[in-house]
Length: 218
Image 1 (cartoon, rainbow, N blue to C red):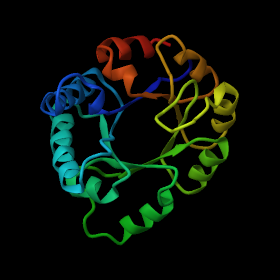
Image 2: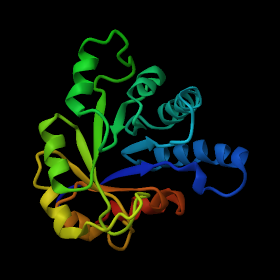
Image 3: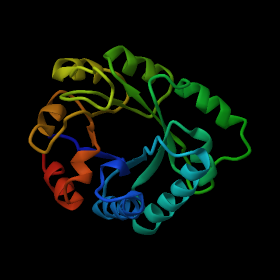
Image 4: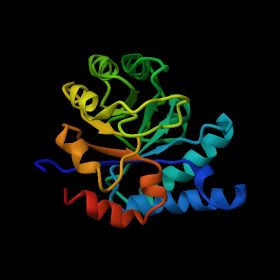
């Protein structure tokens, strides 16, 4: 392919084996593995945690990324306040969240901008091409389009398919493909115009170094 495949690891500690204590140990280890392997973005997406618990985990994740990579950027799912408090690199907004430009407007008047980054990333989710075009108009840095091949945890979600992904990639922001993406089908996403791929199981169920090596050769 003509461009370097961007990689986005989305966390979900519930998919690790063992009890909660074991899963909480496994998650930072996987984040470190992703940072060392050169994953571009990591989204901390632990939706069941309280704001206080999420902030504590986010601070741990920020430290883990910064200690092991100067390139990997950490985003927090949904909670801009937690992202700022923890010093994360950005926030990933759900489709039903406030618009990206509203986050940017709030940041412009905020006295609590993160000190460790010169640009606070605002990413968003899209489930139809129109969502991605709207995100581009609302000043999102990039969009994650899903589900391309399979479900993403949304009840009753049907695969959007490569044709819809190709249409979404016509927006003037990078689009990452999510939903049933594997090492075997990732190339078809890039062929459709995606700037990269995102996943949970893709990274959590494999050795991330091997995933990165395989996808960066596409």
